[in-house]
Length: 175
Image 1 (cartoon, rainbow, N blue to C red):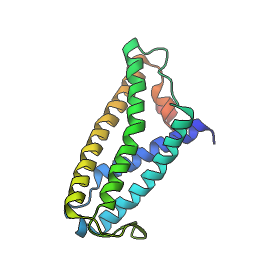
Image 2: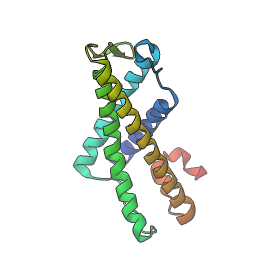
Image 3: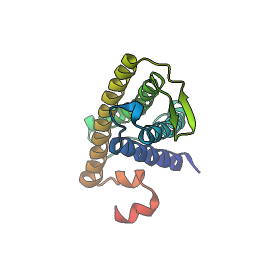
Image 4: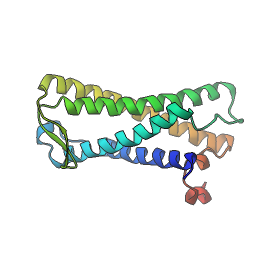
């Protein structure tokens, strides 16, 4: 598997996990959330692994994609900044979620198997960490929507096949 293929897999796997987090959120009373919290924590561990691999690749090799020759001047800079913001934003969301989980005053087990914390945290710090995590996650979702709209605009308006670069080959016939 080459680097580009690995990045595509990491891209779509992290997108699927983020959609899961957007669609399924544990109850406000996290101590009684049960299976939802356990699954949320497990998906968080998976996202942490994906993010760690992707961050390592980015720190070693830099951004995968170039802005493209058809992009007008200011949009080339936007392209670069948007991708850097995503490369930094996802690990911040993962870190804030990990902090919220570690600060919980109740035990959390990822997928009801892997212990995340001992449950010795305080309610105040946990509530604060959870609030920060939700704000950072919402900001990331906005950034992802802007990112997707930008690439759809590129693909449709500039006709530079931006979406073909990011999707698996099996989907190319519809683009």
